[in-house]
Image (cartoon, rainbow over all chains, first blue to last red; front, side, top):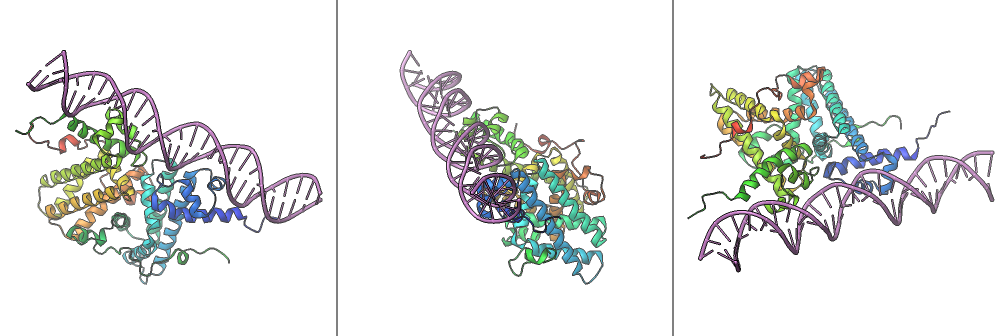
Length: 201
Length: 201
DNA sequence: CATGTGAGTGACTGTACACTCACTCCTGTC
DNA sequence: GACAGGAGTGAGTGTACAGTCACTCACATG
């Protein structure tokens, strides 16, 4: 008979991935020592390498999980939309995305991943992620290519603005860029727990 | 009387900045050792630190120069526009930008800089750069906030697409994202030399 | 008790890197 | 020819880091 209890090392692995999202988000791929990953997860540095073959694999696991969460948020937003008009569905998805990334970690991770995409595994994971959310936005909203393209472009703009803190600046150019963008305010963000459903209890 | 000949060390410095753009573009801020910067510039590692106080200062100099070139390209595009309609001027600027970044270095550098923007000096330089090109696009095109915002957002989308090589993919989602984006083709790019004017000969 | 297994670690290794320092070499000036 | 000063370098230094290895410990099973 197959094992019914998930092994403890598996749960450690997912916990490590969760904390790695936060840790990598703060200091990036190259800027994050494996000792920091271990420390934030509350395990010894050596044990990191029992759970993952190397630093890159852990980063990729974190990035994949990041896109899981993003896709789940988009789905949540879409299904909460009153109208089925493509523009409205995309609008609702955008709102859910903005709430998801209010804590910045998922956004920061994506920016760092793009910069680290000269590492083949990271490049692949990143491309996979963009493919997933774009395909999802396409099929779920039934919007035109132009609408979907605009949706993703605004997402990227949002990353730029948030990384640099532009919405907080009181200058003409900054206001122009930030206008209408739901900038991540800490008020009532969508927490990760609200977004993920972990199967049967 | 003031010196008429630029000191040789000054010319070395600008040459170093030029080659640093290429070197940092390939491997990013943290991923580029100072020895690589020296090697690509054809000088000894030690001399890098006579020309700049530290690695960060050199990166910032490269990034500042990058935005100089971008702004110059936008100006060139704008003044080549037949119409003065904001949408047309922005369109022309976009075309010039696409040609400028055909060699990818300036684009890659911006992506790496965003990811390294937890370093205060890099954050400041990056914000300055975005401010410059946004303000320039605003005043030169006289477009609405929404038009300028869209202009910058499409630029960011272009960075994402180019970093990941998405326009080369033959899939529905990739085509949707790439549609209408002038993706950097190596055909007849606008070279840096065509863009900069170095004062009197 | 003997033995096996998987979780978890302390201590280490080799290397790469940012930055320094004492030095050489060249050129112009008196 | 003596000297000043700037261009440029070889040879280091201290440190941080990815990954390894031999090991302990807790517990389960016969």
